[in-house]
Image 1 (spheres, rainbow, N blue to C red):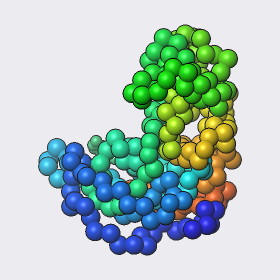
Image 2: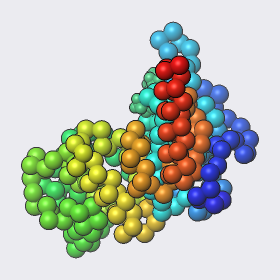
Image 3: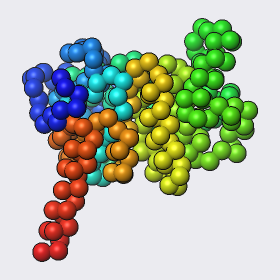
Image 4: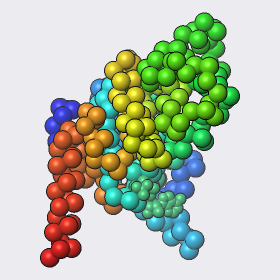
Length: 269
Ligand SMILES: Nc1ncnc2c1ncn2[C@@H]1O[C@H](COP(=O)(O)OP(=O)(O)OP(=O)(O)O)[C@@H](O)[C@H]1O
């Protein structure tokens, strides 16, 4: 598939549902890749929650998305359309009710509020923290931490206590933690929503430059900010639980702007 082509997100392949419904707890995601070039591939994903009355409420419906390896993509759409839900499914934090899912691993999820994930006393200790689960030598840990902090422009903060960092600097440390673990897919949920304008630009640029210095890491970034699209290789737009359009960033930007203009026209007429 041409990565920059605009693709109407329709279900090209009919894949039977793995479950007809789910709270998701015991879904055994059978990961099958259609194409090795894709870091993320989902087709006809569905996800439902159970209401207090016991009914299943669909959140994702026939949701399909393909993201090539090594690219920086953004996911946009109106409030409540399902962006965070899709991201959590891609990150393995939620299990889909049905459909087809492939995400390259290891994958890392970076949350909106950096205070929830930057937890160690110093920057160096925080980035090294996640490496404790691997059987690697101290020299290798030191080297990975240095490279990851360098990739997000934070190497000079190595010894800084984390409580002295700005929100954007904490976000970058959280991203460095994911990069140090050599993640193949980086999932970032509205990182810039808590940040001032300088920090917002710093974080989005850090992701962009860290992908350039990594070996094929792919990032998917949920945002409401159209101006961030200038950093993206591609983007997808969701409405009502499904991706309605995916393609190059400028096409998605034009699409969203024309939707906004037609909405303004409607309320003015
Ligand atoms: N556990 C849940 N129980 C009930 N409804 C849920 C649950 N999780 C999500 N929803 C609903 O699913 C829909 C999609 O939520 P989600 O957070 O994925 O949207 P979003 O596109 O990320 O929204 P926003 O841009 O406002 O962050 C919303 O209507 C939300 O209220």
